[in-house]
Image (cartoon, rainbow, N blue to C red; front, side, top):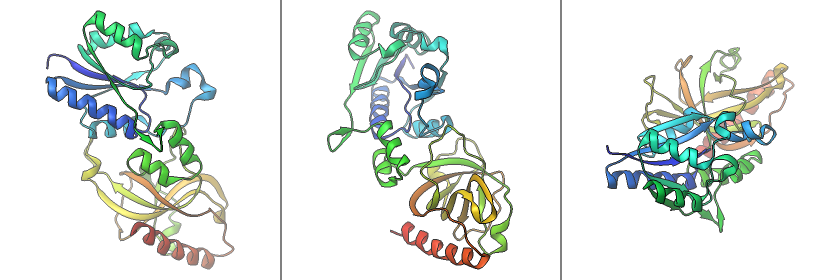
Length: 305
């Protein structure tokens, strides 16, 4: 390879707008026989420059990497976003890209800005490109009802429990990755065995607590296995406290349909499909079991749509 086609940004969610940028990077890299490179940041830049305004994340770094690589990108680079990085102006960023990746083309979203004060807009980058002899491609927004799809609108939809809109704008259902840990084992005693996920990263955005129909992908143990190669199961998930048992901490507890294996220590991807009801306390074991059976029927119906 004689250089790279690079894009630079937060890419939280890797939504349909981001996917259009990634597709342009891969297209140009193939055409020019160049490397395709995504440079992103962790933590989110606002967590450094304006912590009070930092959003919850749609995609944690490992989730983002898999989505970016699935789009055909060869090199995924996470740049630690530090106060020193926050002070770099756009010209310094471009200098880094030229030196580290032999930049030949820079692909930008229509409204992208980088560098101190987001000063690296399209006009400035095009001027720098002429001086440093690299190309610039600007990708038009992906719109719905005239509105450009953005991470902000997806976060708002999820915070209000609008899973369908979020899935439409993401181009996939919203999900979370987690490791299976041991729980109290109560589910098995009432005929509804469950798996428990480790406590989610506090940076991760979750939809409102409740009982959900979900799809679960059991990832193969080998690292970097594409999600499409994993086993998929339906299930129902209690997200939130367990008031019937006096437990107030949020948990993610899932009953998998048609599965009775051991998954302790394994990693799974969980996608929220449909919200079934609020979390609630039950007066008796029998009342809980009866409701869980209704939940199971409702979840299966949602997954079979």
